[in-house]
Length: 71
Image (cartoon, rainbow, N blue to C red; front, side, top):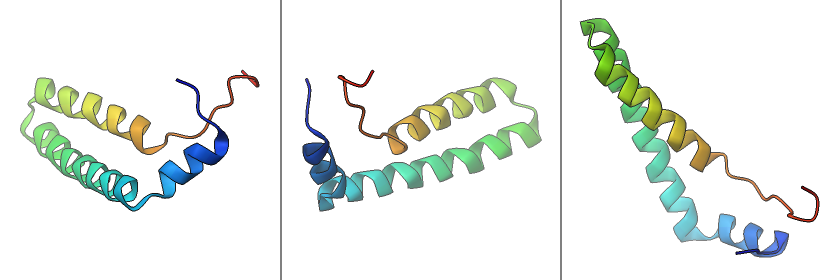
């Protein structure tokens, strides 16, 4: 589905979107704390799972508009 830069901007500035992004950022922070705890206890499998989740959340949080015509 293609949307315009203006539609994307409207979506990103929407109050609901802002709230969802804030919740996702809080989840990311929680996973960072959990990952540090797992590293301290030597649980590398759980730490790696946290790292993967953090990377996924960061991708969502850093989403930007990309014009298909420019790609």
